[in-house]
Image 1 (cartoon, rainbow, N blue to C red):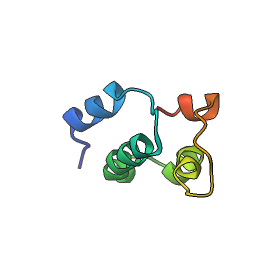
Image 2: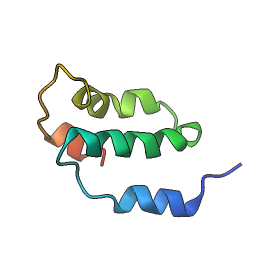
Image 3: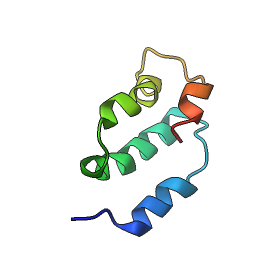
Image 4: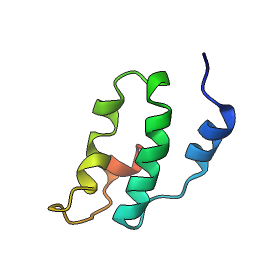
Amino acid sequence: MKSDPSKVAAVRAMPSAKYKDDVKRFLRIVTYLAKFTANLSKLDASLRELHWKTIMFDWQPAQKRLS
């Protein structure tokens, strides 16, 4: 079983998030690839935090390195 190369390319080509909805969209795509990524929950934790309603959206280096 392998990841779909077109989906991986789509993830790599996505621009940095500007809004919470952008983060949600990115996380939905990444979730598709979760079975191919070890420790995804640790890797995407800073992105998941951005999508909480109680957190103000603030794109920082921690999120940038994941996108």
